[in-house]
Length: 198
Image (cartoon, rainbow, N blue to C red):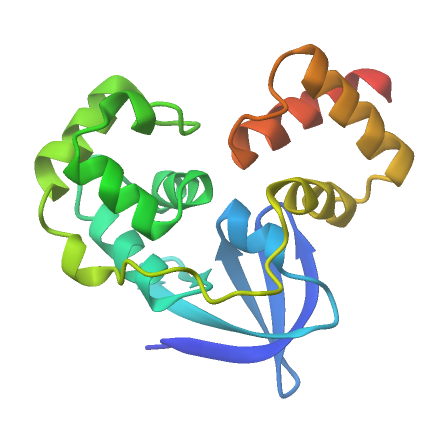
């Protein structure tokens, strides 16, 4: 069972990264926040959840142990699989997610792409009070962390878009009133905008 990987980011595409660990490339699926923070050619450590199925072994990587723990707790919720759990953590970090669940903020949870009212209520019902011990509520000690706007630009750049195209997407988002939306929602809208300009 793989619990942690430290290596060089080789390639990143569509929510997946290849992490080169001493010559071995591990394909790791990550949430959008993690994807936006990773840069090809840099060394990083990912905390890994390993899922073994009959037809595949999948690795899911996170920037912190807290994110991985919350991901694993999300998987215990009825009808929440890895894809949905990654989407949830792409929309909110672990601490904010725990606060939303414990305060029964269903409306806030439904702002996450892929989470409807029924699923949000199910998450609250099944996880309320069960996550606070898994997350240390303290300021994030990441002085070099990119701003939300930087993360958005980096994510599009890693998908192959040029600076001029990224600017077109930003203008389009502002026109649609989505320039302050959560990162996953902005990325989805930006890809729709850019697909129309190709």
